[in-house]
Amino acid sequence: MVDIVFLALAAVSIGASVIALEAREIVYGAVALGVSFLGLAGFFIILDAPFVALFQITVYVGAVVVLILFTVMLIRREKGVKTPAAWERGVGIVAAAVLAIGMGSVAFASGLQTWVAPQGVQVSFREIGVQLLTQYWPILLILGLVLASAVMGALTLAKVEREEK
Amino acid sequence: MPHGFEPLLDYFIVSTILFAIGVYGLVTKRNALRMLFAIEIIINAANLNFVAFSRYLTNPNVTGQTFALFSIALAAAEAAVGLAIIILVFRVNREIDVLELRRLRG
Image 1 (cartoon, each protein chain N blue to C red):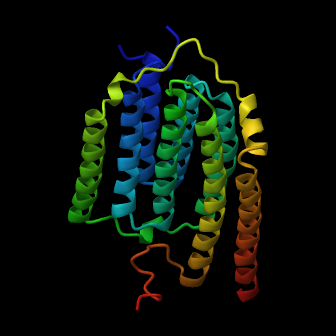
Image 2: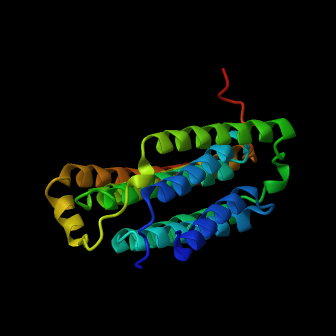
């Protein structure tokens, strides 16, 4: 018995991902990418992870997709990019199918279908904060440095390009 | 019946399909922006696995969610730098077709 909500979320996220890659206009592709991220946020909600779902919506749909949309507006050059030839598309489809079938068969062989979520157990997202500040504080620190350096790097790239102009 | 109690295999199948779509995009697309889309889809498939597996442990804990948060933050940094590089390359070369950018080819 498969849950209807699960099926709907799977259809939305997988379909929107395909549209994101295959849409003729890249603007529609960016919007479809946002829809796919929203579908994954729905998965996180039914997996008892509302904090991750909200983080996903804030960071991905709120920041990354908007950033991508701005970039798409700045770069209006979709016409010049050649569409892949038929054999390139075939190679991609074969590579994806081999990966999917291989990983799927490994999962079937490992007996993953017998794993069922323990019922009646509530995972409190307060523990995320505890873990972040006790067990994983070095990761948090390094992640802050990585984000800061990423922002500085992006600003530096943009600045160099403005001087050149 | 509460939602989200399918066998773990269902989540794994969705995650595998997303990963395969991302690999397909990385292999076939020549537009740098579309390749960035594919990378984001792959990262999302990995995040789904983190959260699903941590929920399905015998004693569910939040470690998978914590690592999914780390991964989301890293993906945001990666997207910022990647988009800046794409804009810079476009300004210099007027081109985002990765097969046409041959200046660094040895």
